[in-house]
Image (cartoon, rainbow, N blue to C red; front, side, top):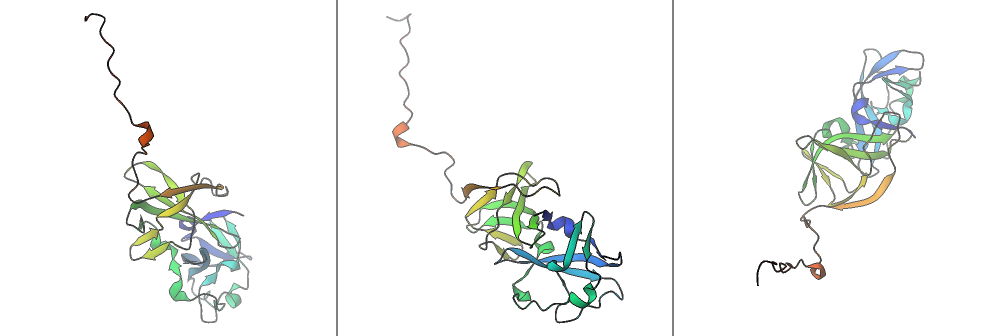
Length: 213
């Protein structure tokens, strides 16, 4: 498995195996229930948009190789790109490029930050994490694990009140996403300090001064 960045994917050239440039990636569509990137919207070059069928987008499965700065597809992509996405309703898909930089909040309204990127497994499109950053704090970004409970509503990405974090921030392009740690963070009205009534602090009586009778 190789983890890819959705942000880096946008505007990348698409070429065939015989080095014919076909177009550029305009956007990537996510299926929110399966938490998967399923297809790419393409700005086809003139005379290269000979896709057929009800869908003019490029299925992610048609990408045969993710090069650092381009995507490679089969030479016969013009005949096969317009496959019928019967399992997917376009009305249920989410345009990945349009959710980048959106505000991320929890279901109860707790702000988390801004959506910096979405990472996915290039072998099957499975989303591996959502990168959320807080530019105003200068704190390192956090990777939130995918869940079908994530909602995309208006100009916000809504996370459940309880969500998992991937431990480490995503690094190099060729580095797989770090193993998820079983860390569950609860947002909302969290106690800023955990207090144990059995350990109530008691003021110690001051020691008598040796200079006083």
